[in-house]
Length: 160
Image 1 (cartoon, rainbow, N blue to C red):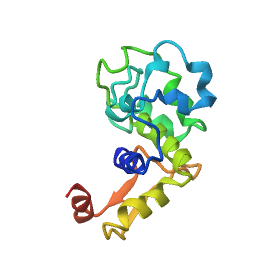
Image 2: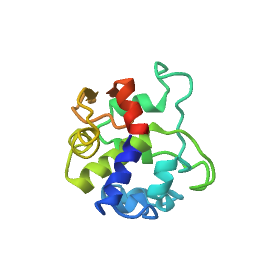
Image 3: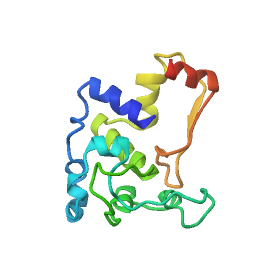
Image 4: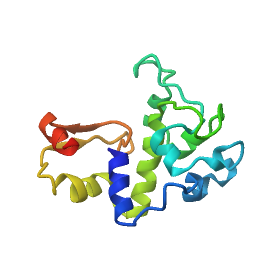
């Protein structure tokens, strides 16, 4: 859903091009601009071949699941990017819910709107979707990587 919202923002020229290095949009992480992280683009974030070490195997109930850590971290972007680089950006797909979390943060900053408000205004209301929920974390931040609740017929509207 975050990728779809990014596409809407891109069509409105609210977000930078997909070739933009993501760390250019996260100045608080300037100290992490090395080891290949500085070459990770928005497109890499959307398609998930970033090269960052990330493990969501074994189910979300497993304490070692990296996505689970997103619930508790104050700085989600640092949590995601403060990882080893295990392959070159663009070389190998690895599902990483943290990338959606970071893109959600960047999208909120670029649009000046919360994900919930932006989704309601730009996607859900125009499609007639009225009954939905996007769960927040313990700090009240939108869980961009999970937590969106839609009815099956409304999800089908989006797909259509």
